[in-house]
Picture (spheres, rainbow, N blue to C red):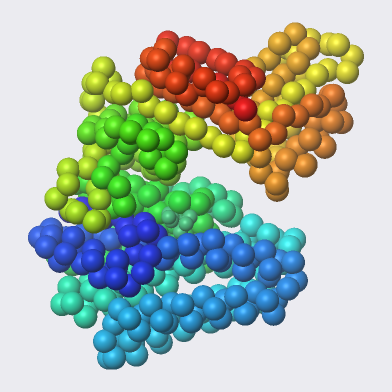
Length: 421
Ligand code: ASP
Ligand code: MG
């Protein structure tokens, strides 16, 4: 039994959704299908959140209407008359839930409001997909995964309640798979015990696939992407990337930590714990070999693995009384970053200064600088890049940094990190 996850790009338009049909219909084993929202729907929903929480409810509802029209149009292209009628009823029910969430949205509960609105994307896409499979004689059951994945109430980054989720998955999904059925669910979303929708963090559908695979003890997970497997760097940023055939769980966790946008960072751990391989394959051509992430891969064969993070901010903090940056100051500094939920991508500290490289996020940075400014002098370098190379060679580092101004460089035997402009 396998889990297949389809991301937004693989179902961006009705033609694409139709093109992935053989990947499913030619499979002989029971499948659990995890879907993301169509294309850039989640971004569109985020715009609606921002309007709704700023009190611009009319604009938010208008934007929701546009999204509704787009989904109905998608369904019209995808489905025949009979299935369109059924699907449009289901879609309209979801849009009624969205409208309710827009009306209830409030800036005092931004993250909560966000999840009630943004969770709709996956419900919509998976609904259409389920009807499309039925129309093509692929029997399947659509399931609202919010009845299975249980979490705490950390909205936008919900923490899974594993025991509860395992129990629910075993009760609701397992029997269907044992009957040889295909089950269609949503990635990215879940619910609290009292029925409030949550999301698992942007790009969280990969994580959903891993959670369910681990809870149901599936044989493998396959993430279907628009590229043939994993590359040693982002092909959008670098020419001549190299495909990685096999890579270990640990290496992918390292890469994700440094900001590689290959797979949602939380995806690997549940799979590693249960030793479930994760395949990354290309939905344009299912015969291409792709990549596999699994245990026991020999790292001697890795090419240099490159991660470049743009739009970074280098924050330099200096003590006002010239006290050293030792345990007490470090503890204050870490608490400030921790309280503001700001991840530090790189740290360096010297006698009276502390440097952190962070994502330049509008919603976090102001508050952070304000909080740091209460205790320390703060200086900033913006628009810097953070380059990380694992399994580096001197040649690669030279190539990647030759036209840059280097602000900071750290290296260990396996990893080099450079903050540059
Ligand atoms: N639709 C969500 C997002 O765009 C989750 C996902 O695609 O994995 O972030
Ligand atoms: Mg996505």
